[in-house]
Figure 1 (spheres, rainbow, N blue to C red):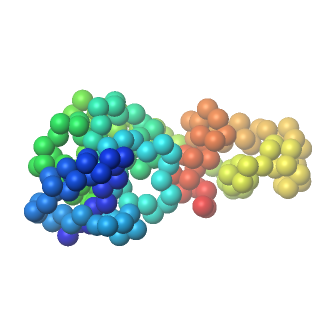
Figure 2 (spheres, rainbow, N blue to C red; figure 1 turned 30 degrees about the horizontal axis):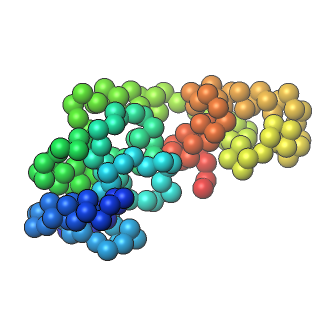
Figure 3 (tube, rainbow, N blue to C red; figure 1 turned 135 degrees about the vertical axis):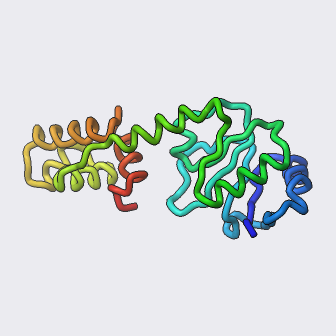
Amino acid sequence: MIRVWIETASAVTRAGFESLLEGSQGIAVVDSPGEAEVILREELPDGPEPPGAPPIVVLTDAALTPRALYVGVRAVLPREAGPEQIVAALHAAAAGLVAVPVESSALVMQAAAADLEVESLTPRELETLEMMAEGLSNKQIAARLHISDHTAKFHVNSILGKLHAGTRTEAVMRGIRLGLVKV
């Protein structure tokens, strides 16, 4: 039995989802997010979910982006999706699968390929990435590692390149997602 938390802005929408899922094979709607194995939402999350958070299934007309996958969304369905599609997406998300419309599948493949192409970081770069995750500046990283500011900047730029990140924040988020940064 998959325990589902329904997260909506409207009590009417929540009641509609509950009614739609009532009697569905293998689905139980729970009373709090802490009990959930999967979250059903009507909007994309604003930011990344904490590690260990349940996967998210979203019913939206918004286009799927790599950002949605990175913040914990595991299924995106159009708002007019039928009960069978929603139940199938909930089961897929609970099983660790990604369920998206066929026209979005290329995007999922590109996002996965980008993660596979990451070069290995050196032990020093891993240390530097950990410090970046703490919010330290290049100067602070240099002081902590007893290296020059220039060398710290070199390590940061190398990390950005290897993780295919445009910003320090993006590098840290990718590092967290890849398990390189301890949270």
